Length: 385
Image (cartoon, helix red, strand yellow):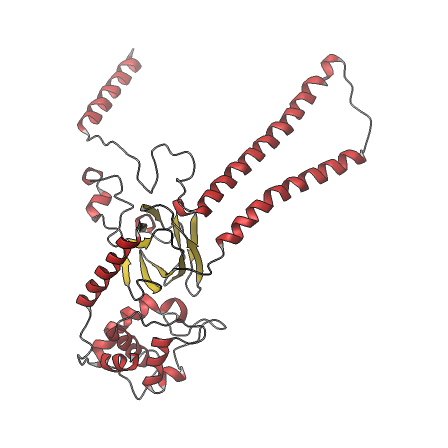
């Protein structure tokens, strides 16, 4: 009786507690996870459709093998049990059985590997892209630089837009996407091949949009690439898929796929926005001002390859500490950043002030003591012409 009364009291207390809590109706997230989702996101690219079909095919093959193997096993156990008078066979080897259980699995593996290989090869073909975007993972946000195609020169950072108090306090949650919404989404045109060039400036991250069947690691000191061609307009959501630190859960990705007309309008608006925020290239800066600004630019754009120490990655990326280019005439270093060189892309998408700042930073950092230790934005502007 005492136990029954205690259980009744606990149930009553739980009911009162739940009655006093706000109730949330969880809804599907368009372009993201769905309520009680049991399988992949709805595919919106050809590759995603192929991956979905391959998943179903492999699942069916595995199910057939499972039923066949265990069916034969259970049938044999039941049909040839000792209680009905069966005695164990006396044969030791069977050439036919040996051949069968070698050939049949081999044919099954080949049958599974051929369609899978075709899809994997297609996933790696980043040629003939209409748009190229550099993606830089950083703790805990994403940097995007439009390198090639319409929108070239656009650059921005993308981070979780939900206020911190709403993240940690469930009572302040305002919508179902509170952990997968950003302040600056990636915008791309529909039915265009988009190549992503990925790297990171601190630890390993992974850029993932399930609806595109895209998941590619972003590794410091390395450049990886992948691609997608979205065939349906809409908002598609993903997140960093590599454990990258304590804020890993708050590093979402949002891609807006729009029509060609909407994309052109977005490009025009974004460039006007960037121009409004741009520094006056004719302003004269001090060395300390440029060094302070340059440290930020270096951390966001250069550290992945050349490292925070300026030592680079032996055999892959040259050192800037002690570099002849960095310590030589400043015009040559300006030219390298604007035009690029073998093994290094152009950074002309940076503003004149940003290029001047990062060059000045490298010329006055580590063991470098360049005689021409400062570059003004006006010099960069002149070099572009």
